[in-house]
Length: 367
Image 1: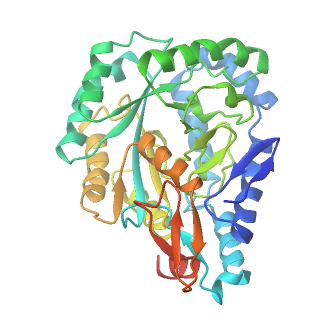
Image 2: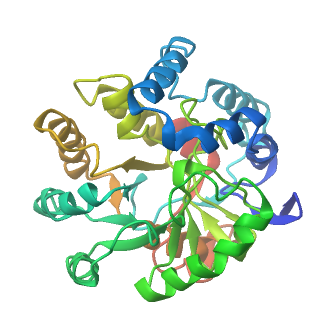
């Protein structure tokens, strides 16, 4: 993969050439825009005293300003389509390593951010729902907000799930300035080691990929392709992992449950399923963020089950934990395509045993 430099960080995307140019452009925009504004600073200073009903009212105002398919990054899709039309892929059968192993068309990653003690109590029942369908996920716990029972963590791991670290204490101040961030990082890394976790997600998906290089992880999951409902909006555009600095970035690509069920009061999984098809068409990664704290009513749980059942029945999707996806992506990143004397091609490197060759023309004309 081509190595690019963005904000001083080495970055390698899923694709090279003009497609990589599009991915680099949108990541650059996101990194430039993901900074705390004065309104942001004031809001998170006052947030503990703002009633939740008022917070949700402010979020619903954002809804009125969004297009009907706000969950699809239309600007990125236009740039991507134009790059495919203008690129060499239309006439040449350039070989690449398919984004996903073992013949899968796309990837599925379930993730939960556990925000409160009430949410912690709901974890076992929600995990059992996924277990019955043969699905596993990552459970991101907050290390310095509530008590985390090691027995619960061990039980989740024994069932095949993964444990992640969700910030420091979820007060919204982690990225207010570098001094606060640097003071908290050692304790975050301590929690990662104690829980044997390899993944991190920042609360409220605030992010600074340069600062986050000091967090000792295999992957970060604080970015998204698009999500206008966040305090730090923007989006990296792409629906594939990418290497940034010392870790793999796994952007979430399906809307959060809080947005759908609390802010928009959706009664079905229709938006999730529509966006899932978009990601599938791009052979991307469908990562969703849900919270046990909000999946706390039969109606909301039913919506989530509708998504889970759809995913469980789709044989084209690789159902994996984020750590498994990041591990595969690291192998793919270290591999390459070699043209053989007879004109055929082969994968060389750690992805050779599970990888599949395809042309970019096939990938985006067929997928």
